[in-house]
Image (cartoon, rainbow, N blue to C red; front, side, top):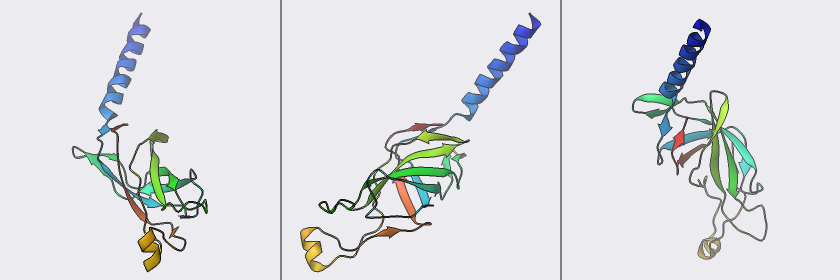
Length: 148
């Protein structure tokens, strides 16, 4: 009977500790990400890329995501298909928290612009290939709250 009480107390402490460490990051919070992998405006749509948080994310004065945490995203649009002339846009898909990936939903970010001639500007086209090198900063805003 004493063992059962000890197990119950340990379980209660574990549950209470998980609630203390739980945090919700509200929608609209900005996540600044520094790219780790290289990609370009000709990268296939859906391909993933890796980054890391460039700044801590704090809620009510408490850091919930530390700078340097791994992040992952995907190419949302690109000019991989020569019949389309979509700009390069990327979305953040997850953030690594304590060794597990937590899904996030963010706005699409358009890193930089390729060269534009007068004719291309008039008809909405861009020229050249935009390359996003490691270390490029991108700012994403959460579209939905994230519970950690």
